[in-house]
Amino acid sequence: MRDKLSGKRIFYLALSLFAFVVGPLGLGGCTHTPNTYTMKPQKVERIRSNLGTVGVTVSDYKAEAEISLPGRGVLGGAGRGFVMGATIPVMVGAVSPIPGGTVIGILFVPIGAVVGTFYGAAKAAPAEEVDKAKEMANRTVEKLRAMDLRLTLQNEVIQQGSERTGFNIVPLSGVGPQDAKEVVQYDQLQIPGIDTVLELRMERGGLWGFYTVKPPSSAFVEIRAQLIRVSDNEVLLDDVVFCASEERSYKKWSEDEGQLFLESIISCIPSLAEKVVDDFFLVYPLAAQK
Image 1 (cartoon, rainbow, N blue to C red):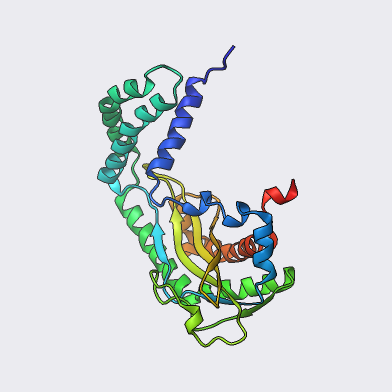
Image 2: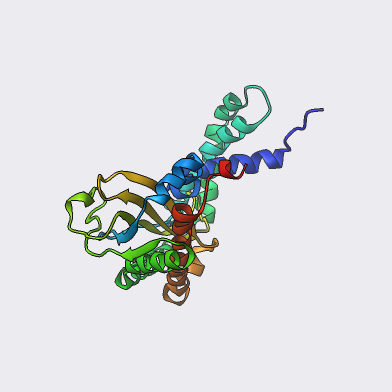
């Protein structure tokens, strides 16, 4: 007999799908598969056997700060409740085993929107609390920027790469991209002794949470790493790496002048460096192990 989804399981599956669809950040780093994992093992070996001396450089622009907070006050909560209420019936219908479930879900959108609006208004966080949380988050972001975690990331990658691999990995300063759209032509620069550049771009960081009325959030950092051959600027390997903390309420992140937020972001740096070193210098595709 075919198993049927219980009503509770359908609801939570739909809620998860809703959160994924309307998540404000899109978190490409969570689902991105590094091309190291999909390439043929022989190609990965060929790339690594010809790296020579690897110079690690970092972007010179500020990472984009993205802060997810609850809906602000009654109006903010009502607005988010409206979106949730209008979306969830369609999602429930889409994952339901009932024929025509999506169409049935659409018919319940008006009711869901009204119920969601009232729910959001009732459960909304006070505007003054949200404002204070936003101010705290902004102050913490400025503290993090003053620490220059880009340099910390560069040093961590060099240290881990030197200790854990057999490659010659050295710092390469002052040549990284100056803005997010710049494509550096390394073959035109004076960087003697460097055969390959490991370019690190710190793209985004902050607090991530789904677009619900009063969501918990995670401190996160996202970077992009590219391994580039100097002689012709060919991108040999490309990876997006994402680190996130445990979820906590916006009130928890606001305590002690955002100290937990600060510490969580800083603690991501070694994890990001480890992932970069693994993906670019150590890990082989699964096909290599078959």
